[in-house]
Length: 345
Ligand code: SF4
Ligand code: SF4
View (tube, rainbow, N blue to C red):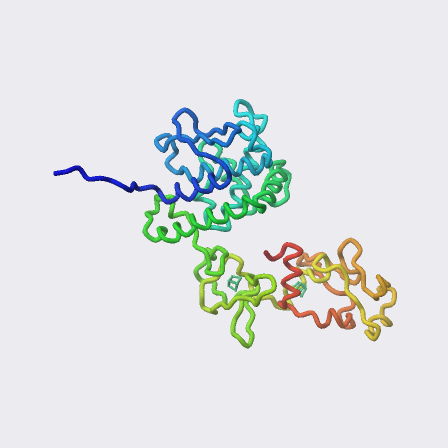
């Protein structure tokens, strides 16, 4: 019987996605048992062979990790061996940690944080990362990771990383349901059809979310409204995304106060607003307009600090300016103010 002629050979889809990512960033990937991961400063990444990987490692994660090293080390690090880092002592440990933070920040929105987690002995730092690995804090790696994140939003990184992480997430969506609990694929997370990760709670529904608003055209999600476009439709009984928030009512204002502090810069007071005569000591002229100022970010009429015993309260609530009176709890501006002070995402 004549031998079968084999034309096509099987390749791991994830390998293909991330080898293409590397290629599109000008990196050639070589495999060698001589090194776990190294970069020659001339465009060649050498990554170990699969037999030497940890069981939860993948070529995809290794390439992604090296791209993150490049990002935190700066665009010119492409011309430096191992991105300019020393592998023989702890001089550059901070850059390793910054790389972890960036890797977590970039993979989280795609539901891939655990799937794309760093491996080897570095894992302890990764596992201790907070939910937002780029949030300001004392760790000096944060500022480096933040700078790397900014670079990741620029060409060519942004399109390559978005494409590769999206494609990885699509595969995750396809295999999660058939993956055993011991499989790395089982730790990937589903996304809501509007893009955010699904809520971990199956009980939460879009219909009970603060971001959902009813209108003539049905229920719409303001959280996922693209700039300049109308908010997308949601169904009240579909499973919520992780951005779900409890519907806001007036009682929530006491521990919020966002609209009366850093959520907005000032309150303008129209010429006929009675507030001008009732509280002239609180009104100032600003660029030709009368305003109630916010020195240090807080309205001069605001009392309290948001604590249960001392909630935020307007000292002149009953006679507040018309603009404050018109302000709607749970309205678009309320949600914007809460976002600006970090109470909403
Ligand atoms: S933000 Fe709220 S309404 Fe929008 S998709 Fe998430 S849960 Fe649904
Ligand atoms: S931002 Fe909204 S919830 Fe917060 S105090 Fe203002 S109206 Fe109340």
